[in-house]
Amino acid sequence: MNEQDIKQMVTDMAIRVKEASRTLAALPTAVKNRALKQTAQLLMEERPFIAAENAKDLAAGREKNLTPAMLDRLELSDKVIESMVAGLREVAALPDPVGEVSDMKRLPSGITVGRMRIPLGVVGMIYESRPNVTIDAAALCLKAGNGVLLRGGSEAIHSNLALAQVLRRGLEDAGIDPGVVQVIPTVDREAVTFMLDLEDFLDVIIPRGGEGLIRFVTKTSRIPVLKHYKGVCHAFVDQDADIAMATDIIDNAKTQRPGVCNALEGLLVHREIAGAFLPVVAERLIEKGVELRGCTRSCSLVPAMVPATESDWGKEFLDLILAVRIVDSMDEAIAYIDRYGSQHTETIITGSYPRSRRFLREVDASAVMVNASTRFNDGGQFG
Image (cartoon, rainbow, N blue to C red; front, top):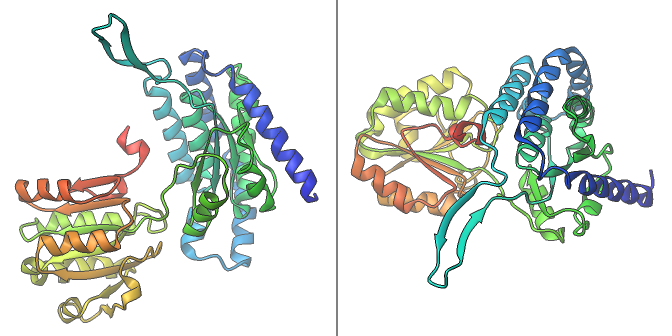
């Protein structure tokens, strides 16, 4: 396809979503939920087809020498498919936000004012590597009454189109116009540029991927963008933390899925607990293949650590690598997070309620946690 053909195709798809989405605002909750549940059932039934298409993407990814973290995000294993199925059913179980009214009040003038939640309209979603976003984004947009135009990464083209087929069937079975969800079927990058110019048909753009993609989208788009650039998440193990609990939390945050944006990238340890804690957590992490890059004091406690360089502080590894630093105080920990964090997710592990409250007040991030893994910063986990 030449550029003009791609531009016309993307424009036509955006118009199709816009037209189809007009029916969504008035769609009964039961119909939307039926579509979500039917799609979940079809995902289970079509696992062999999905796996075969995903295998094409994985084979191409290996030929292109994609990193293990990228391949992990790309793979639609049985576990990932089951997670998508569970996610669809969870979204179906959520209250319908459309039409919800809150904050009603009568003003001195006599008029009554309140807030009503309504659909945005059409969402444009641009994402890399993770084909499960195709299902996640479509499910959330449908429940909220929005149409969605999806443009996944070229490395996941077969997987995304397979999932789009399943979505289309789920919508049709529920009596919903399948045009409300469209997946752009080309790997040509010009499709993204053309998509970002469609301000008459798309109401918001949400990019999910690497920092380079998100900066390109932010710079190029004529449409409002909801974004975060990267996930440099930290855990601060305070002086009175429970060592066993802290070890379990750090293990989960780093090793469960190291290639995602809510995985742990930096570990800060109060000097008063470092001697007791670091050897314990290091042993657990090293057993699981994690490379630890530490400050001078950390390396003296754990000889297996690799000395960190300046570039390791604040780096999004997206791999089994963790930067480790001993700090003298909470002041130093908060200052470090303020300098090197990405305002994604930060957590403190502590037995002190006052110190946990201070951390919550003073750390600036989309999610700030106490005695919990950074991996919990996920829409499904938050309900």
